[in-house]
Length: 254
Image 1 (cartoon, rainbow, N blue to C red):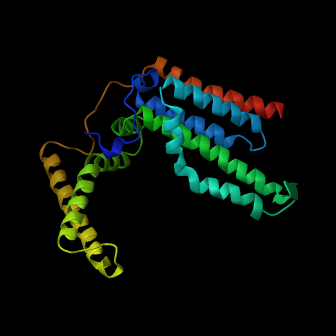
Image 2 (cartoon, rainbow, N blue to C red):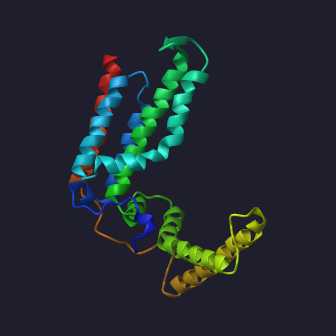
Image 3 (cartoon, helix red, strand yellow):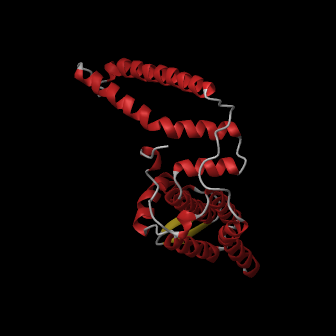
């Protein structure tokens, strides 16, 4: 399976994190995210511990801080929501720099901001150290529903093909005098979308029939290296274990 636009978040580096099997990285990322979400929002210093843990993992995986910061901008809408909550929240009001802010809104905004940011960073670390193909292989090994992994596999495989075809159709429309900036030419754009859908459907049918003729039975043959060893599972489990330790300690001391 080729790379391309489906692997824009992957960093081709040689690190211990890159060499881990995908299923253990997926399980560890989900476990860390659950620990972060389950941590009470009032235990402030626990989130500092999580941030340090994420930074250590980024260093081990050779993922630059600037790369993470730029990609984390995807959460900007949630950051804006977190900044608005203190002003529109109900309940007890507190004064800060002459502004009347909602105490509940402050806690709610903090909760969204810190947990959302940590979740995005964990997801980015997973994407940076695992190709899209390996992510699908890892989900398959974790017994994700077969139909989900098959759809994701075909989406990754043919995404570049569809994007390229859509680009060629757009160039063809413009060369014939179409200008998508004008609303009255929206009909041509919609027709192009319909034509692209029909082409994708027909191509999918041809590919599926070709796969059936070659013995496809609903599951792709195993790909990549063997399943993770017990040692690799234990190594990956150290990250969620440390996160859980930080969270439990913070709760007990608060």
